[in-house]
Length: 450
Image (cartoon, rainbow, N blue to C red; front, side, top):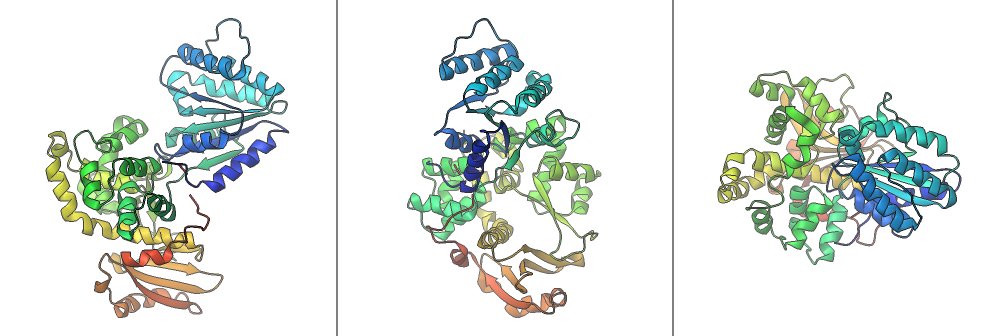
């Protein structure tokens, strides 16, 4: 699959590169695996002098031997003797950058924790001593969210505040997914939504489905849930390193949230443990769940729910992890039939999120969310507010929009509308068929690269 989008990130990376004429620059790319961080860095660097290191789990001496071979090949410089510490590799690169500017990409930067944690303080010291006289454009990439934020945003860590820019690389937005599908002659709104449900806009997953000609819903389900599918163990592969030995508790919480138990009290009543700390870490340290409140709720309001931010992980916990016994015994037909049976009901909440994302891309609203009152009364699926133009959009979202009654929506909205007395209110019923009205023309600039 060709490289798509990421125009904003590429522009910012080029700006940082231009600044290296005065002093070195350090950029950090953070995002979960499969989101396209490495491809973004390589796409940026392909027209410039660069060297790329992948930090794999091996001894520091072996890693340095690999790096040294890359340096010899890229710079054609004689190096006498053996280098066994990454500190000396980094020092050598800084010396080379005094003579000629170039970009250094270090991928899976968090792996130094497993190899030699002292590398971070060694890099910090060398960076502080040499940054001003070198012209190194340093890009570090990491996919373990908690560790990367610890390295660069924890004030007790040596590299705290050293990064000139920190990018959080996000999955593709619906408009970008739509452009990709159109390029492959997949041009219907149902396919766009199904790709959104299963991939969440994750470039690698989109690529896998397209490569394997999984376009229609049945084809996608059959490919995702089959023997040796790359998706079957993906959730575990992504998260066990993040969670460590407590992964079982975290997985149980995420399974319940994926099943629709979105309030803390619901999760605690089933697991019979206090999950406050786990939820807090899932949100702040791992960025896997998000806490949300009714739109326009007061900051101190205790009315809140949780959701898994990644559509693929939500699907994985709801259908694959929950049915792991069937998966482990190879009963994939059972799991596939379960997905097909529950797909429409499962997609109800995902469709709401889909429209939230679509409206966010229009740039017409500064606040987008949902609304409910105590006891989950008077729930409204989508509320979008433009405070500058004083307008508010209230919508019900269903797979079958014929079931939506606008008069009922207006009744449910009465208390909320009272909070916006001078706002122009608009009421809508939205179904999947309406999504195309919120997609930009293909020639429009997109926010989203692979």
